[in-house]
Image 1 (tube, one colour):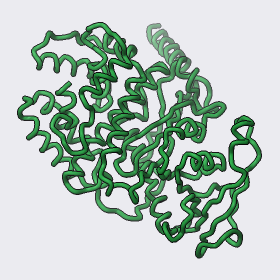
Image 2 (spheres, helix red, strand yellow):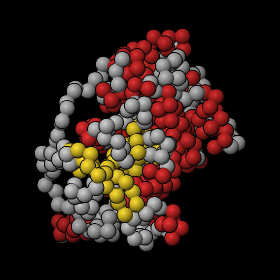
Image 3 (cartoon, one colour):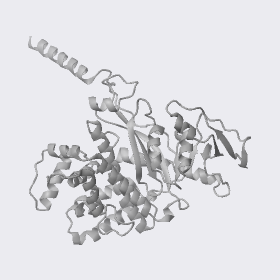
Image 4 (cartoon, one colour):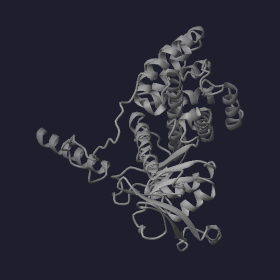
Length: 454
């Protein structure tokens, strides 16, 4: 446990506290995993290997088992088999609630212990956005995470939607929800409804316009949460109405729309009949906010807050591209959820190390490169794993100093086209199930051989 925690600069760190306190980690494993047999792949060992697996470049179970063998030999223990079957069964036994709990606790501890100067006016700004991930095309995955409706059976891959709440200040994923991309109540707003109760009073939520519905805004305001959201495309804004606050900046009263089919009558009646919202045109957008005091928060500050929403796009890109969560490997829905949780836990651990490096260097965590930090941790992995405990403080200092040097260039107002320059290879797209095409090719080959042997 000491060597695992040491990889994330947790043994000697006094900055921001500990990432994973040893006593709490033992308590969480005991509460979530219950009593278990003393195996080679215990819940703690399995969790540690799972985290290292999603952080590695290979991400295969065979690579994780090889790591376990290396660690046991380095500690003078009996060597284990390289058969990945026992490790895969141990991952199946590992409770999903344990992975999710550790991931959320790491994110919550990081945000609670961060310096106040990292926050916006002493308040925590939380970014909300959703994305999709693909997984192997198995019958179990298709039943729970069906493929896109426009794709023919056997030609698509199951898709899962993930909505995450990310801290603007430190970049940690504080909470998330996952579900299918097809079917009733499978949109991003439906998943945010399940997460809204976990927001804290006093938070500021910054989100895209798809979350700008009346009932979502009313629910967040009831929880004591302020928000800055781009105006929904279907809502018409007329600055000649309402109470003017400045040029193209006013307060307006929204009227409660009719009850949607997915909402029950009791919830609908609990919603306020009107909402007083601030609408401001700035930066080419119309922004909607519950921060109605124009003297306290100018519309230029609203623009800066909304522009910070792009950070969640970069965070999700880092998780999907740098950590390779875009294409999951697990073949059952239960393991898919565990794989998503393991990726987010590993991401939060890396963010915790980055926060320590930023705090010691007098920087903001957002000034450091996530990919660069992950490269440094991968480079020092074996060094920290096999280091004598007495020498860990010096090596930790080198890790933090290296991460602090991975600064992102200051690029204000950066824009990039959502277009691809590199052309794909000129292969035909698969228009039939792979098994059908493979059988036809085998039949053609047999015909060619039979013709040649005549």
